[in-house]
Amino acid sequence: MQVAPNKTFMPQRWTLFVYLTLAGLILSGTLLQGFLIGTSLFADAAWGQTAHSILGMVLLLLTLLLPLVGLLVRLPGRITVFSAVLFVLTLLQVTLAGLARSAPFLAALHPTNAMLMFAVNMYLFIQVWHITQGRQTESAQPQAASAVPDEKKKHSKVPLEINLATGSYLLYALISVAVLTLFILNRPQVANAVRSMHPNFSQSEVDGAVASIQLIVVGAHIVFGSSAAILAFLIRTGKNWARIVSSVVSGLVVLEILYEWSSPTDVPAVLGPNQRIYAVFVQILMIMMVLACAALQWIPQASRTFFAAEKASTPGNIPDAAGSNIGN
Image (cartoon, rainbow, N blue to C red):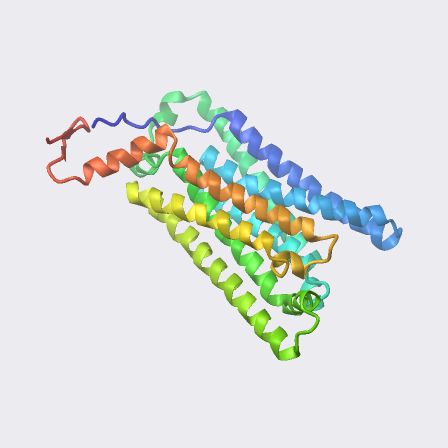
């Protein structure tokens, strides 16, 4: 099998503009959040609290897209890492807001975390702005820009689709950790849900039911979260078995989340009736992410990489100088 040589990828200005637009929207949204919660605290405006909650979920979605766009643009690794950190901080921000009843002192970190989000977001915006200006200079010197170190060429051999799948699996693992933390901290709400379902249960029966539920939920999130983190790196080896396993795991994750929806004592039970829509939103997001991870590995460009790795690992196939395999 002959694999066409990979061309050096140079981010175009419009892709950088997409990243800057997302970062700018998140920056503006973070500032707007302060105003909206202020209308609720100081002007007693009920709509301010509602708008604050809705915008928080929008920002969560935008910060999820940010590291994925960073992988698409193939920005420097530190920027992609900080983009993922911004998503984690935003996810933590949403989680802290849900701890007002069960852990008020942790919930008090909500405004402090918002300041961290703003600082990381500003850093990312400034860094990518400088890169955009540098791209303008490089476009005037195409020959100089074409000289890429061997290490970068080696890194660019990983298809874009696999980079995106890697990032999505890692983000899924982080979301799973956040959901698991929220579930563990809100044990009293789970107990209340069990009591409402079985009012005749004694306290020992309630405790036993809660322990069983937590064992199942905690076990599922640990297994699937760890699997996603491991598969994020295994699929980069180009082994065909790795993408088959990851596709099977993605299907099991979807089934597990659908099972959670059928149980009134899972994550939605630890939130108030008017907040359960947020849990459903996060779970739908998780389903979309794992399905996208599986699909990205089977599109033609990624498939060629997996087949090439499989062919190269077969005994008797020796790559010649031109990059083709000589064998049977």
